[in-house]
Length: 104
Image (tube, rainbow, N blue to C red; front, side, top):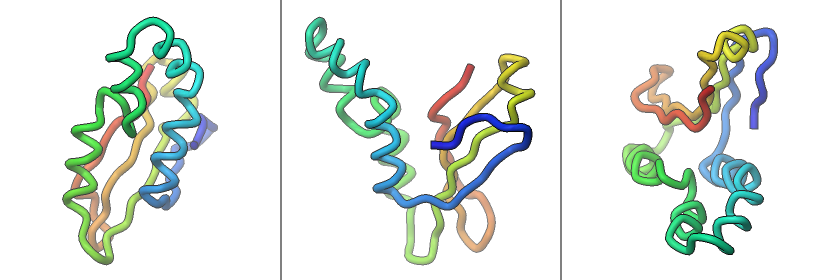
């Protein structure tokens, strides 16, 4: 998982890496939800939780040769409460779809 730095960041990722990063980030929330709200826990268990439908739609668009890239905006955007991070699907070097996984 990329964290805010002085510059915008991008790195290529796999579907498996993206889903593992999500699960690592929500591990504590999932444990708390299991104790309190089984329906919420069930949703958090899916990759990207409540945004799972958007994630699955992004994956469904993938074709051989496409690339999945993680992105994170620069620290200044997070300090200004406009930060965002997520994943974008690139085809022939162009972004064709994306999902925001974190904002502030």
